[in-house]
Each structure stands twice: as C-alpha cells, then as structure tokens.
Length: 193
Image 1 (cartoon, rainbow, N blue to C red):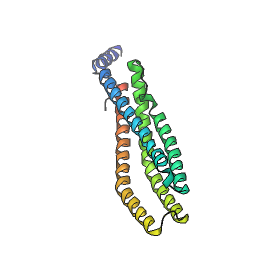
Image 2: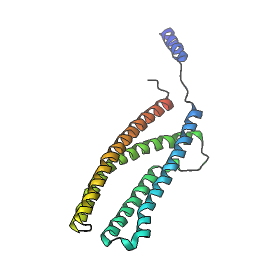
Image 3: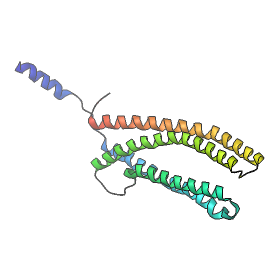
Image 4: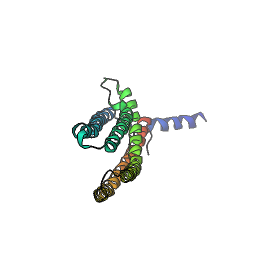
C-alpha cells in the first residue's frame, strides 16, 4: 500500500501547475484603473449639463421646467455618487502590493458587474421618467400641444435608437465582466478548465 501511495505521490508531483502571471494581472489592473478614472470624469462632466441649462437659461425657463431640471440634477448627483462609490477600488493612487492589486481588481470587476446591471435598469428608468415628464408637461400645459407633440416625437425617436444600444452595451459589459471575474478567479486558484 505504501508503494501505491508513493507512485500516486510521484504522479501528483509531476502534474503541471500554471502559475498566475502577476505581471499580466498588474497590467490589467492599471488599465482598469485608467478606464474607471476616465468614466468618473465623464460622469461628473455629465452633471454639468442640467446645471448649465439652469444657469444660462434661468430667465427663459418656466418654473416647472426649472423644477424638473433641478430634480434631474439631484437624481444625477445621486447616481454619479453611487457609481463613483462602486468604482472606488480603481480610484486609489496607492502603491500597494501585487496581492492588494489583485484583490482590488477582483472587487472592481464585481462592482463593474453591478454598474452594468445599474445601466441595464436605467434604461427602464429613462422610459418611465420620459413618460412621466411628458404627462406632467401636458397636464401643466407648459408647451402648446403642437410643440409638445414635436418634443414627444423627438424623444421617442431618440430613445428608440439610443436605449436599445445602451441595453445591448450594458448586457455585453455585464457578460464580459462576469467572464473576466470567473477567469481571474480560476487563474488565482490555479484551476484549469
């Protein structure tokens, strides 16, 4: 029996084990950090739009439109804060160890899946808010019916083109990040598929 265990032990020792390429993981982490910082910059720049409209067009806007823009800005700030919080692992400037980089990369990929999910759900939110906006605009008679009709046609056309693209993009990102997370975990645990 001892001889059988020795041969099994020798066979076990001959097995190839792929080591994680830590240099490759570190490069990937740097790329992720750069992308996430760029996305955060875009997120904060997007907040400037409603504020700029309010600032420069305040005298031309009615109180309802101003209120809607302020509400949009508040919701936008909350969304950007949440998404920035999800990106927090990639925003640090520390010179941490490779092990910490790997842990942060895992956490950031997990949060990227959440961001993609959030983007998927935002498509429905935009549709609901658009309907609510135009119902309110109609109810409060902010625009003449013909102008309101033109705005509705433009919004529906724009949303019909853009929202499906965002949905597909977010679904692909979610799928890609889920796959990347699985691959990273396999790499780190030394499991071969």
